[in-house]
Image (cartoon, rainbow, N blue to C red; front, side, top):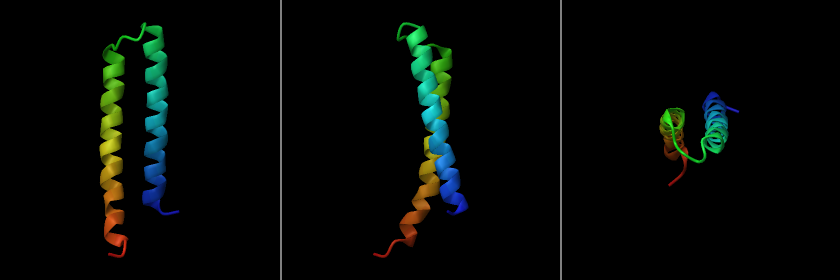
Length: 64
């Protein structure tokens, strides 16, 4: 497994963990978004953007 694949897997795992934390916080807050949930969503977006940029490189490796 290449380092890009490992880093991508790590980012995906972190995203999943943050989504679980969002679910917990929302359950405690009566399904209302608070500052913490909004911050977690920003972290998720940043991690997804980074993962997309990393994985776009694979497009160039595929035969046309």
